Length: 147
Image 1 (cartoon, one colour):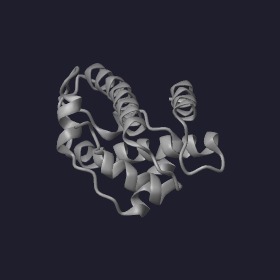
Image 2 (tube, rainbow, N blue to C red):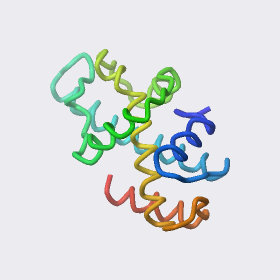
Image 3 (spheres, rainbow, N blue to C red):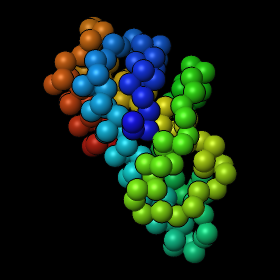
Image 4 (cartoon, helix red, strand yellow):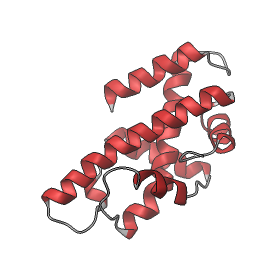
């Protein structure tokens, strides 16, 4: 299992952006979300090291205005994501301990990244509830250019 389950992604996409995603596309979206999360935390951990800090704090994470806005949208959905798989995933790479504030926000950050992916996919796939694999890949490529 990745940082979120297929079932959780289905719920987020249906409720948050009106999309139905099959399992193979969901796995690709979750993989992509993990990579984006890793990128954000690589930067955060480098900042913490430069500060000679013992832990990563929220200000170390490079959260854009768009991410912060979508965090509000994710929060409105009142969905829960388990924090343990997220921490386990982050510990696979370079590791600097996380502050309690950062640990507390991890599920919301992952949910937000998933929701953002869904929004971009929805924009590219236009009027369909079931995007194609090509539309999903185009959306994830667009996200890579931005984040």
